[in-house]
Amino acid sequence: MTLFRLDERLAGDSLEIGALNLCQIRLMNDRRWPWLALVPLRPGAVEIHDLAQSDQDLLAKETALAASVLKILTNCEKINSAALGNIVRQLHVHVVARSPSDPNWPGPVWGFGQRVPYDEEALRLWTDRLKAAFIPYFS
Image (cartoon, rainbow, N blue to C red; front, side, top):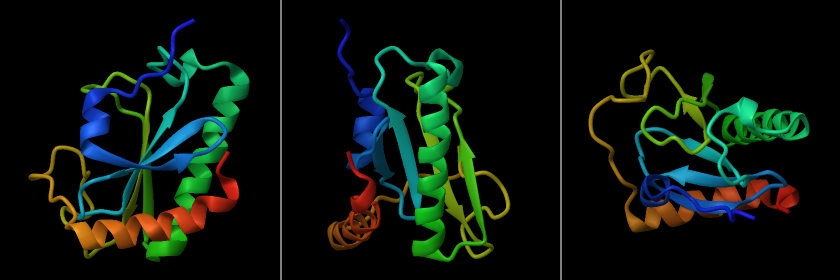
């Protein structure tokens, strides 16, 4: 049996918030956008269709939950969700809160400028807020 291993790039670019029934929730370390990555804890999954149907359904529910949490916490205008995987092949879904005041609005966040990491205090505050919002759903 193959054990789940998080892609090194995802590990380096994000911080774990917690785990739902299917996905690990990670905060992307880029303060330009409130940005989560949901990583299904299924070894070898590259595409959504690699998951069993029940896991596909759960991924949709967990993505919607993450979108709702970001919407509530940020009061954003729009949520962008995508599973791109052109650079990091491990299946993961980006959930990004967007507003007209953010950089590159209305363009995509991917490939725009350079990542701006959170400072230590802002990272702690944001992760605390996210953990508090997700805690009823953690597995």
